[in-house]
Image (tube, rainbow, N blue to C red):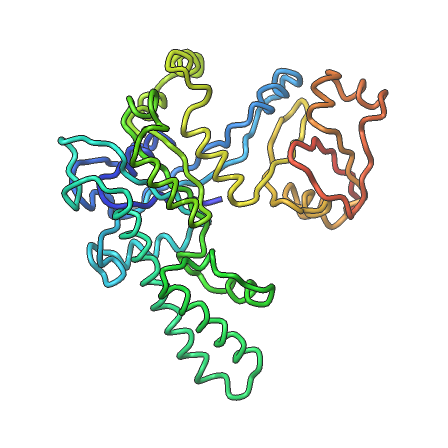
Length: 364
């Protein structure tokens, strides 16, 4: 899973990225500090693995992983190449989802490219540049398709859909919100449109607002309204605070969050929400060698789940022995679970669930 962190310059993207990954990406008070995208891979927080690790005492524990890409700040005119915009937009095409960082804090020491803080304007600036870039791509595709169609019904249907898509984009409707039938969804899946990617708006708040008065922050409310209209997600966060938390050990972090009256760090929530946004779930494998989370999409059947571990597991799939995480941890051992009849034998049509603990039987 690859997530792109985007936004205007100086909204806190690189600070947030540093906090997420501890990768040390440069964060400075001037536009276009980030030219080439910074990339960091982080573990998906999952307390189930902690519990299972305590049970099995394995040689290692492996979490599911997320790749974050810190993309340079976009500006008005990016789709026409302003501020190296064409290059930066190409980086966004490579990600699965977008974390759009929106500045909702005041700080006279950190300049804003537009001179003042206005989340609505900032969101519109980024979204319009993404739309303009998509329109340019669609125009090229329509032009190529028109030349190649010559009675080809499939191509003609594609051109018809592209024109529909263009009309909606010109109304500033992102591609992800355009009503499509199954055939149109298939066509859309072949086009790397920026506005078809799912979005989480990360509202970067001051520490005071984040801890004490998120709900009364007018800028946060504005972002929530925009997100609701788009069908996007919103997550309040304080990049500076997360940067402080990231440097702490696990126990210190827990104490710090407790003192703030916060149950979970914003970054953990951001990673988990991003995972959910893309329709991803985890199944688990356990044993003395390794306790591990494996990433699959919702709806994955048992043989394909086995294939995420090794292709031979899918080719020679016989069955999956499955127990729910809660059942195993409640009873304390696989032996006790089997005695209670809670370990199920599932076949090729079984659809995997989040939290399934699985042993695959196969023969190659």
